[in-house]
Image: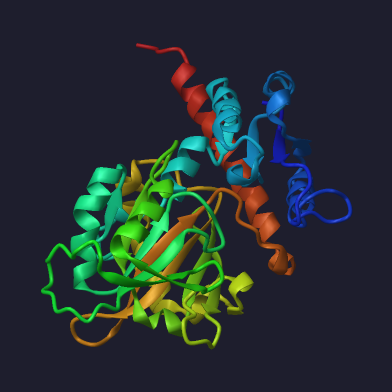
Length: 360
């Protein structure tokens, strides 16, 4: 074991400070070194993938990815191939690309729709035909939210509501000339389309690698705010209460759209934390039995149960490149270093047991 962890970063971008790194990267590196391990930041480029593999595979025990794959010039394909090659020769991936793909994908919601975390009428469209067959019926039940698999900060997330005067019943397949009001979470701007026009527009979210759309009911209580739990492994670090801007059409909980953030300790949300902690084994199992990411978030919205009591509905997970710059003073970087080292040491212990000679 080398007792070394590499941290991957992308060059440039608005998330970098004067030293060229993310503001939360150096703190992770320093926290690892304080535990008598070594760490190094390596900038990733697709054209360097073979050089990076040769360099990293012979010097490190694990990697921590601090890159949003969607922001790479050529997307995630080559980067994920490089990470898989490193994992295949024994490095512990944090997270492994399969974890980013399955855990971070919007259809994780559909996989959890048989639990109490997500409404059962949540659908995923992987092809254009299923979208055109099902969405005209699902929108007949009330306001829906469509989420593209790609994108971030609310891009490609639409609240869709029928504003047509014609009467219809729940479950009807609405005519293609039905009038819709469509609000994008990116900046809460409003567009008006017919059902056909909007579905034609949304086809771009389905085509291409990992293309698909998730369709779920709109939660009116989003006006009270979205609740994000930031996790390091199985341990909650803090809770962010993200309240949308006070505007007529606002439902987005991103800073870009004017949402207001407050930061709480997990103990300030006891009911949510108990429900979420009890659900962790189910989440991992339903998504595919994959490891919980090293650094990740879970976003919840408030709803009412059948008795009028508060309940929490899962909106999405994020695990590709979660930032925590505003909370460096809480020592989250130390928790990350401890958990990363634990995962590597656990794998080496397991490997040692597996490879030990069998005695009779």
